[in-house]
Image (tube, rainbow, N blue to C red):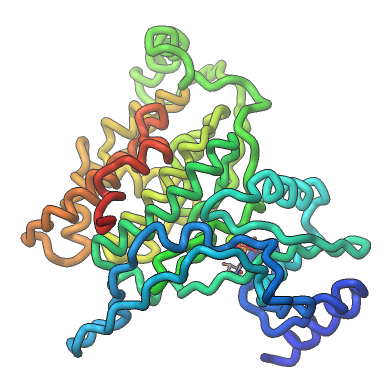
Length: 396
Ligand code: ADP
Ligand code: MG
């Protein structure tokens, strides 16, 4: 470890006196926008302590063998069967040092939602938290995982199904508690491709369902919505921006990561639902199927809209915008009227425009199209997704 990392670790150990007697920091494992995460050893670890149940779902699916390189050698031996379900306290923990610049309400929100979600399958539980003046650290069980970029190109369809079974199990239980994660992306879903298990982490942007601003027209029935939008439509039909735009300016939560934001987030919908997480999960699947990471690479929301419009076409993007009371028009030549099918996008991304997708992959593409449905009301929910044929692949 470099000297400044060691210096930071030393400082953290010293600023929290009780912490020092309980945990020994080992190394830095992550540095995000809002925190630094260290791997640490639990000094009071006792292997006979059975208060922690981390193997709850270990035997839910038999893992297919994983290929980690493109080599042509003999296939790797199948992994050993998962251990029988047992309860144990983790020896290693992840210590998340939340930056002191985060607001106290934000830090409180993250810890509180983790507490609410304790016991949810495939969600990384909170063990404890410490505070010393303005410094807060959260302690979570350490979860072994691989870097997404190292395996996403090599997943077979059954392995993809295992990944999304685990992710959607987490999403379904989070959404059942009426909580939106808001930042679903590969670095926040720690996946072990050998054990075929993952856990959802990072509730730093998560929030409870509901809204505090004005309602969005997307929740009106279509006739009521069109009545409200008629003035907007007639002024833009004459060309250009409405001269006297009477719509109030809108503020909506746009928290999340570029490239993973759902269309309703981009169009500043004020009544966002857990479906925004399902869209982001869909973007992960699109990344895996197209073998391109990152798939979307926009610098801002307008570019992100253009990228989505390139796939779906102007017509559908226009109605999606209207759904939330916005106009979408573009004269960018690469954005066609009707867009492309996901199958075509995936074939082009793989530089195989002519190769037909195998049937199993078509099931994955159908699942993808249900997750990346532009209208959140028609998009599949996490609970429904668990019953889709794609997530049954490789189960028996
Ligand atoms: P941030 O809010 O800074 O993004 P995260 O909670 O996403 O913080 O953690 C950042 C990184 O730290 C993760 O992407 C992951 O690599 C690592 N990490 C977080 N929690 C754990 C854990 N329980 N086990 C192992 N690694 C973890
Ligand atoms: Mg994160």
